[in-house]
Image 1 (spheres, rainbow, N blue to C red):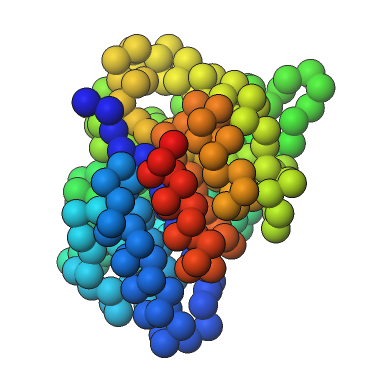
Image 2: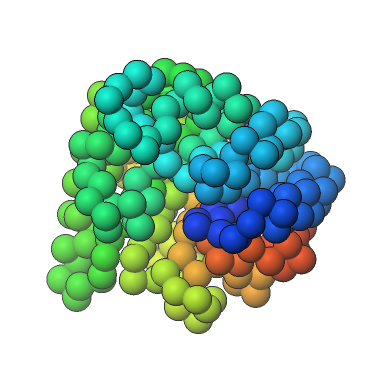
Length: 254
């Protein structure tokens, strides 16, 4: 059975008020709830997650932008998988490029991944190179990220994992900066090849592979139709309820 497309709204550190967050969440939920070929995940900042506790549906899910690697620890400022699960979160982003830029390592990604899975959350693990060099060293960088980030994961667990290919060089404020669909397809195939070498061909087919990086309404169709991915990780464009709603409808039709 073909999996539904997974479209993830990563609000990052937005919006500025709870009132704005409620409006954005409700509008996005209203659109996503009507679509039968798309799963919509909304990831607000931590202070707003409680506003939407158990507010998900069978088509729209609550997610988190990060998670800690333990349920009980001396870890001021962190949020545990247990807390997220109790509030009704189903998904969590792990290893986002902006977290990695602040010092997140592949080892901590691996620990967070295992903790999230143990609590029954569906992790969205972000990987991607900083730049594309002419010699192709970025392939080795991505392979090392995948190998270390999925350390300790079993073949069967890939059924409950999504992977977001998020190249840093393609992250910007405009669709013009996004990776081309042919590049996205190439890297999607490469990710599956690495996973196949590590865990076997069957396991490599289990995760949904998403693309993130300057995704907007106007490049949704070519990325999903030609990029060889099963969904999108959307940043700034998810803050516009009308525009993001159009992206969801487009994904449902592709």
